Each structure stands twice: as C-alpha cells, then as structure tokens.
Image (tube, rainbow, N blue to C red; front, side, top):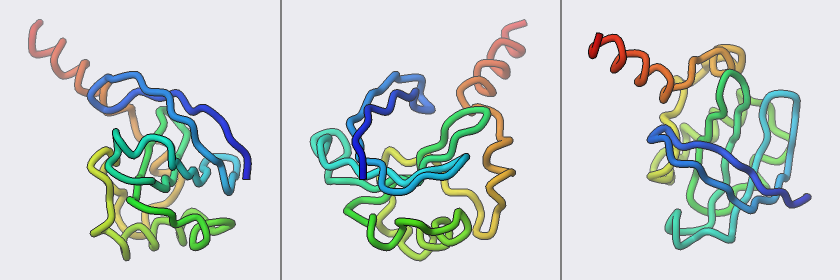
Length: 123
C-alpha cells in the first residue's frame, strides 16, 4: 500500500485533491482507500478509480480494501453492485453490472458533455 494525493474534478466541476492509499493498481484502474476526509465523505471510503477520457470514482463507505485488493475490474464492479447500499453520495453513478472496463474508459467526461449541451442550447 502506498500513499498519494489524487487530484480530480467532480461531475459538478469542483476540483478536489485527496490523500489516498492505493492498495491495488492496474493499467486503467486502481483501488484507493481514504481515511483522511471523513468530514467530506461522511466516513472512510474505498474507491474503484477508473482512468480514461476522464476519471471515474465509484466510492463505497468504509474500508473494503481486503475484498478488492488484486481483484479484476469485473470482480470489483460485481462487489460494488452487491454492496450498493454502501455507495457514497460523492460516487459517480455505477456502470451497469457486467459492463466492460473499456466501455467505462471510453465514456466521455460528464462535465464536458453537460457544457457541450448547454453551449449548443445557448446558440
């Protein structure tokens, strides 16, 4: 387990930086544990972080590192769906059960999509 500061922008466009412990990492996703920001998230949290066109943060309340450490993306997603009652209010919407990692990676950034729609509507 190693610590890092993760910088990201929420779907609402709010820039954030969080001290996290990365417990498992692969080319396009990692498992991150954060026990520093419980005042923001309401508890310690474990996130499945997917990097692609934009980062996605699928966040569970509590420490789930033992269950997710070294798991495949499909196994992590399955675990999140089985524990949906623990999804944190700051989490991105979960991908459909069984959705491929590549589909999640290829998704456009929701903030940029919202801005495109708004600018188109404004002419």
